[in-house]
Amino acid sequence: MVYTKERLLVDLRGLGIQAGDTLMVHSSVKSVGETENRADTILDALIEAVGEEGLLLMPCHTWAQMGPQHPVFDPETEPSCVGILPDLLRRRQGVYRSLHPTHSVVAWGKDAQAYIAGEERCTTPCPRQGCWGRLYDRKAKVLFLGCPLSKNTFIHSVEEWADVPLRLTEQPVQFRIVTHDGRGTIPVAVYRHFNAKCPHISENFVKLREPFAFCGAMTEGKVGDAHCYLGDAVGMAQVTLALLRQDLQLLCDMRPLPENWQQLLKPEIK
Image (cartoon, rainbow, N blue to C red):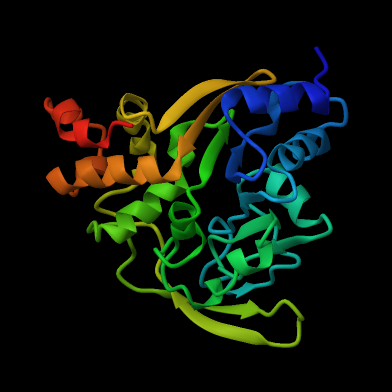
């Protein structure tokens, strides 16, 4: 089957995405299946789903290539390391990219420019006052379009708020960020999401699926051929923080959740 924009839009509405939403999208284009105009059809459907009164966001991360050997971040030219859709979006008219050297975000829609402002001052990947923390303030939805929950960058942000140890490098990397007008650079020292004592942390985020569903913070469905999760940022944060209050290192490995996790989360049920 070849999916049209209209068919994908029906699927997005059925999943729970509405006009006016703030929507962060993690994506796997190939998971959607064959579309009428390839990846652009998916973008068109997402843009129409949130509408001009909504805000469409995507991670446009560069952590894979940015570092001591490549310390200058140019938001106009540096490609994303997390898929084709963010790179396609950032090239469209009216799209803004934040100035975070490793965890930038691209934004289209209402208040897009204001939403991404100030990230050049961030010294960690996902601080509470940055683009990832603002998902909570905007009561955003987070769509995993054919992606596993190991891609849930928002949980990295929640762990930062909770001061979970062993999440950041001991020393920051010195970066220079090219300004949007290209006329200068901004120096910033940023800690990275890595610690040798606790590697591959995000792979453990998948065990939050059941608690999220239990509390009504996540639903599942399909968009095209892609199996999708749609999370509520406020609900996901509250569930994660409730579990971390019991064990700050809960997400450091794949050991089971505590036997009483449902009891712990009853106050978080919607």
